[in-house]
Length: 234
Image 1 (tube, rainbow, N blue to C red):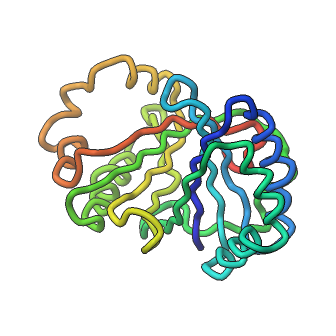
Image 2 (cartoon, rainbow, N blue to C red):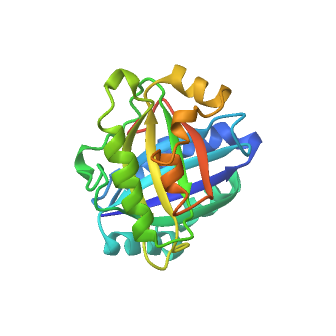
Image 3 (cartoon, rainbow, N blue to C red):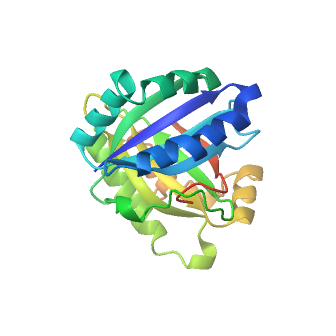
C-alpha cells in the first residue's frame, strides 16, 4: 500500500470553496472505485506556520492504482475537474510514502473508510518531518528504539503524543533522506506546556531521545495540523 501526502497552498479567498470541493467532489469520486481513499484532511493551525496550508493524506491500493489515478488526472475523466480545482489553490506539493517496518499503520481497508462527510470532534496532529545527515535506515531505527518504544512504556495519562504512523519516501518520488512521524496530540495541556516552557533538563541528558537523535539529525520540522470535522480519519 502507498500513501500520497500533499501540501496544498490554498488561495485565502477560496478557503471554504477548496474544502467543499474536497468534501463534496474529491472524496466521493475516490470512493466510487477500489483504488484509493482520502484518509485525512487537515488545516495547518493558524499561528503555527505559513498561511492557508492544508495537508491531505490519501491511501492508494498499490502502484498500479497510483498510475491509474495519475492518468485519469492527466488525460482522463478527472482532467477537467482538476483543472478547475487548481484555480482554488496557488500550488500543491506531493510525495508518495511507504510505511516503515515498525509503523502502527501499515494497511488500510479501503472499503471501511467513511466517504459520506459524517462529522466528528476535531483533532490535533503533530507531523514531524526529519532530514538525517546519517543513514536513513539508522534514523528510522532510532525513531523506533529511542522514541516509539520508549513512549509506549509511558502511562496513558502522561502521554502527549500517540504515534499513529511513520513513513519514508517511496524511492524516486522526493528527497531520499526524509521520514515523517504522524502523531495525534492526546494531551492539549501538555502541548501548551511544550510550547510555553523550555525543555526540561532531564530531556537533555546523554541518554535522552533528544540527545541520541542528534547522532542522526539536527534538522526537522514540526507542523501542527487540525483535522476538519468531516475528515474520514481523525
